[in-house]
Image (cartoon, rainbow, N blue to C red; front, side, top):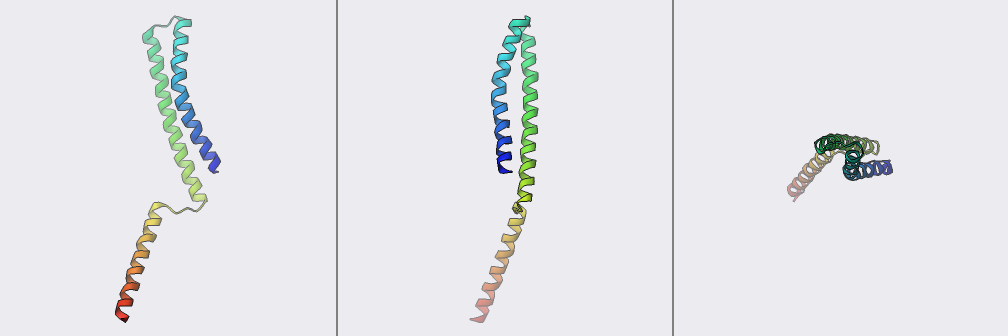
Length: 104
């Protein structure tokens, strides 16, 4: 499961970094082949970059969801559960120290 998360994350990073470079190459090629104006080419780049931004957001959400599901399956405590347990332990330590002081 961890390998799956790692691969999904790396895929998202790879797609994001490669895509911007490829979009610029693609737009130049379209501009040359189809005689598209620079403004139209820029519009295509802007639209594609917006799609990349949305894809990255979706990928981030997917990674977060998969991470949460994996941690739940592995029965790893949440930060809130950990903090609650830490608070309870501190309270118990304080109570035992008070009892020891009373005995002395």
